[in-house]
Structures are given as C-alpha cells and as structure tokens.
Image 1: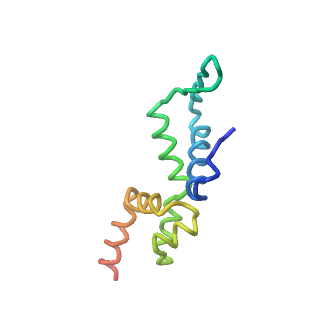
Image 2: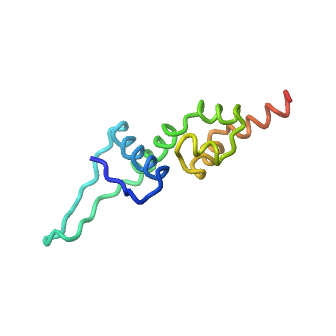
Length: 113
C-alpha cells in the first residue's frame, strides 16, 4: 500500500508514488512501524541508503534520458517540459544537469551549429 498526501501537487504525488514503487523494484526491506502502547503515535525505521536509491531511481523512471533529449529537441522550456511529464521543474532541471545532457547539448550546438 502506498500512502501519499492528496494535498500535494500532482507532480509531487507522482514523485512520491514513483519513489515508493522504486523501493519495490529495488527489493528494499520495508520500514518497521512501531506504535505507541496507546496507538496514537507511530515511529518508523529509516534506511538512508535505501531512501537515496529509491529517490534516484524514481527520478530516472519519471524522466529517463530519452525524455530529456526529446525536450531539448522540441526546445521545451523547463516549465513546459515539467508540465508535459507531470514532474516538478526542480526535478526536470536536476535531471538535465545530473545526466550531463545540458552540457552535451550545448557542446553539440557549438560544434555543429
């Protein structure tokens, strides 16, 4: 079961859901939920390595390199691209930078016009 906040933006919801699906794909161990004796408070375990892996994979699944390349070919602004793929502009910009695609694109434009 995946629980997400319906008050978050659709882009945030997509990211949250994909993050949880990434945990399944990566076969991560689920967090342990510890309830207080009264049942009114819960704490869960936290595995930083697994959380980082799931966040990384979620970004890759939401915005694979081919999707980023398409955005560059179509000359979409970060705002247009994030709207098209229903992700945040922050995620789009991060993925463009971290994949090196922005730098590679600029080098190709410089070399080939």
